[in-house]
Length: 312
Length: 326
Image 1 (cartoon, each protein chain N blue to C red):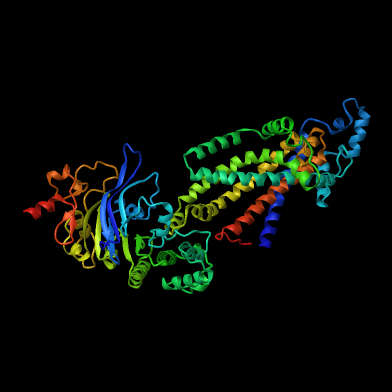
Image 2 (image 1 turned 45 degrees about the vertical axis):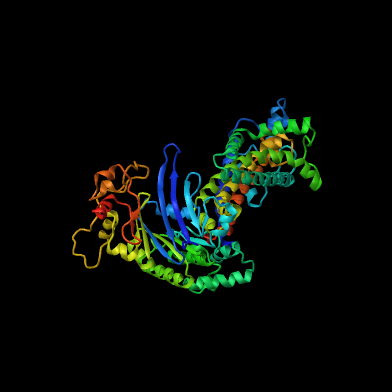
């Protein structure tokens, strides 16, 4: 098992490397000059040149790339152009907020989505199923920032139930601040997870072993949860992995709407200011997340499905 | 009690739209006595499996619509509330299915799955359950049952899985064991072993057996009485000797004629001309008429009733009715 995990992690290096290279060059091809962004439109050419020299931006592109990789090799993401802070410090400061948001959102999404899917599957083509279909259609269609803005206006501005921005301190403060942005993401995810659960459960409930369970005299509840859902969750775990990643990418917009600290917020600011090192650091973090979540889901699979055995 | 354990009366099962239904089982009536082994024969699509599933109410409703009466020890099962039905399933009536490869839950151990039926029907003690599971698995011929408890179905062969299914079915000493083509999906050598096991279980538990098969040879090994179905209806119902010695219905005669024997000098095997009508096609008259060598005029318009032709030998055919009358 340990060898399998190690092999998978090593296998992920090319992926992360490719993403990095892409981002490195894409950022530099895009219009916009970090020196202008930092010093303003009225800066003198001499000042701009001095700034570029200081940040290493006057070197030829391949050389910058080599420098960047050399830094990475010793886990040095470099320094922010804007704030003279180390990128690693910025990331470490913002990462917990993003994780807090993503984890809360995914949990709420699962708690909401799985029962909705079960309800739809067990009431196929009846009212709950139709309602679920409409719910998920809306969930698929509505953009996260838009839903976030609506919830913010209704629950924070009008009703005053939740804070308007920030992240709060301490466990309860954090929870109080994270709940509305998390619900924003969770509502959208629950539509996806609900649909997935419904399809998977319907498939499983038609299987022969479910008929066997009924023939044994198992009650409907036991048939659905013990025999049905447990098998239905197997294909679902892949979907949940995807959903975690979608939530993570959704957190970028939601952090902006709710003005929460987080890697997403950090990235957006960095892109505005052409703060290359921060963008690169943020993207590395996201790429690592994708790799780790996928790996985690594959490992979960090994534990829940006895038929899957790992060959290292 | 009238000496009937299971008494099916006028059972019909329909699928499809209410206005234009497809009637898969059409007015089927027969009975199984306590301890008796009855075979239900017919081609694919004759409605025999659906008939068997109806007894345990395992035909999904909707889309299926089941009507008629299924009396088990005098109680009609069809209107029974779900909870009472669940108390009967697996305890009073149990079932072995055709597909051993897919009939066990892939994420539960063999031990859990056998123990579950014991737990559902009142065995609360974990240790006693475990002991009984080991005993049952040994009984059905799973080698080294103790160490196989924690194995998963995918680690078992088809024959072994069918043995596990049989262990589940007999775990609570059912009064009626329904076996739906229990050997069809297995290799010939394994088929013989599973049949032997069914015979052994019959001797041991005195359960009645309803064996569904398309294979008259299999039925002959185990059953005393045979019910022959064709296109959703019963065409003949007779004791096994009586049926083999003198099949009445032209369809049964055709079936028996088409069984090859070791001493056959025929160059071609016999086959009944034509093919089974698709379910839902016109049910006017006798559905076997288009393939029947002795069809009369009235066969086209009137459906023959299932009537006695000699002691305990029922058949539904106008031609033999006419013969009897003559």
